Amino acid sequence: MNDEIDSLEAELAALAPRDLSPQLAGRIAAELEQEGPAPLRRWRLGQVLAAIAVGAVAASAVAAAWLWRNDQRTAQADSPAAPIALPVATAFDPALPSVWTFRRAADEPAGQLDGLLDRHSGRTRLEQPHYVQIRGFGASDVERNDLLGEL
Amino acid sequence: MRSFFFVCLLLVGLACPALSAAQNPFQRTPLAENAALQYWQAFAQMQSLDKDQMKVLEEWNTVSLDDPAVKKVLDAGQSSLMYLHRGARMKQCDWGLDYGDGISMLMPHLAKARDLARLAALHGRQEFERGSPKLARGDATSIMVLARHVGRDPTMICVLVRFGIEGLAVDLFAPHVTELKAPYSQAVAMFEALPPAPGVLQTLVVEKNYFAAWIAKKLREEEARQPGAGLTLWKNFVLGADVPEAIKQLKIEEAIRRTEELLPVYDELAKLVALPKDQFDAQYPAFIQKAKEANPVAGLIVPAVDQLLAKERRHQARLAMSMAATAVAEGGPEKLKDIKDPFGDGPFTYRQLDKGFELQSKLLFEGQPVTLKAGQGAKK
Image (cartoon, rainbow over all chains, first blue to last red; front, side):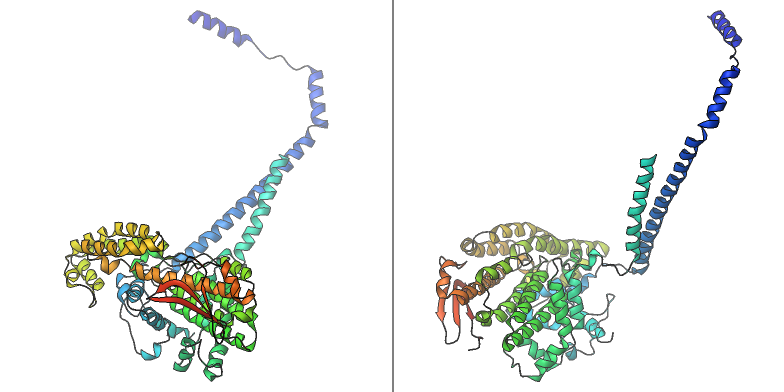
């Protein structure tokens, strides 16, 4: 088995490429000189323009992503550090228009719901000018309505 | 290669306008097409009222239009009315309510919307009196759309406030129905084009999942957070002289269990509410009595659906009668033959009055037939 491979290797090693004939070398040189450079130039120009276009798209995408991230960052920066869920005590605060206070009023005789709406429309603020709420959530709707007049 | 080049150019072309739009703060985004934003501007423009002005709004339907306070209220409310009409032209309305807040969810827009509707009704009444029914009709239409926008959220309270605001439009419109000269078909088409709004039946899913289930979950969370906190929360629920002592004395585990056991009651209740009126009326008393006997917490948390449905039906009857009044104004009482009372087998009953006329439905509300007086505001 090894003898066969050795002889093949020797045969292959003996092979050598033929030299180009002067005619063939001349023809190739002439063709390269006459036709070669034009397609090459077109191909390179197309490549450059395509690269510019791809670059522009990429730049647009980067800019869009930057703008989007900027918006996100602004929103995050503005969000409060405290939890954003309403405290459950809000439900029972009669000064606030919560589902629970409305529900209790709706179960009462006719007129209770209207009375509650009157209170929460901010029109009874004159009756409670010194009402102060002490809790984490902040001002009641009545108080917020008062602030509107100061803006 | 050439096609690749053009694709690249196309992409660049598409990207540029998008970028310029993102950077242009004056470009109106789809978010602006939300009627609630216009309504909140209307609320913000509503000035604080003194006692006389408050009374004017409360009694918009009867107050003398010569009262100087009326002029003050209307003058001060011009901007609010403008924003109301802007909002009413928009199809979308989202008040941004967060149902995750459960029964703590705040709905500050309800009271303000009711007052804005009263202001528009006062203005509409003045326009009728001045002989400008078209302007008054614009007010009535905007009130109706505002009502539908307020009532888009499927909660009991939003639905009730919707009934109240739509009722204002009926009260504004009915006395002057003969002046409007609107064809019945046109009035019906306008009514049918209003934004859809849920009724009592559709609110039961929200009542169950976001209020009853939320209460049980919150009690459990509070107790887990700090032993005793859940019971403290429960004590808040049972405040009030009308709550039975047995419920006030429940231990926290029992309160949670009882509240959770109510959830299937809502499903049964929804099936009942979907039944025709006579079947609901026949079955509801026994159902609710049984539910309360099995679980006393039902009386505290499950809404009084029979009362709500009674209000809903009364409201439906009044709306139907206001449409029928348009037909009477257009073609006389004989036109009623073609319009069926939704709560009876035949048409509404017609009665001529000294001024205007009265329609009556077969529906009873608190033992009395539901009626609508119309045309009494017309000038002769």
